[in-house]
Length: 154
Image (cartoon, rainbow, N blue to C red):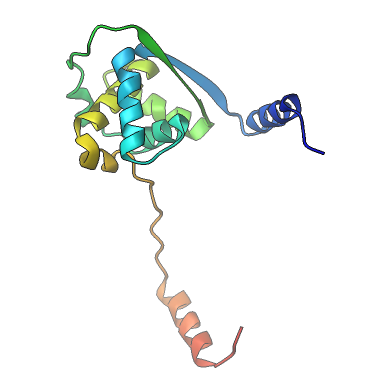
């Protein structure tokens, strides 16, 4: 039997509580929400939370600061909501501090502005998924080589 919307919401809320996720709400200028939508479209990202997390992980505070004086059209503000886990929240706080003590909202605005200014191709570096580099030690390499040479099939 399918779960009701309330049951699914309760389960999701419980998971978020277990992972210590918090919801952030940033009241940003309207142009910012449109820029975030452009970034998501250009980089084929469907979730705003994913796009914001990648912007935070790949943040370049020096480049973001260059956008501090950018003019945006005067329009109604928008609301950006997303959930973050403690590690991302700490990273956002670090980025905000490196932006001359900016608020989280201001840091998010500057990161979006910076990535958007780079254009469709240039924004990809701001929204790339960080990959871990895997290095195999000589000892493990030797063991793998020996295992491969024994002719044992798995």
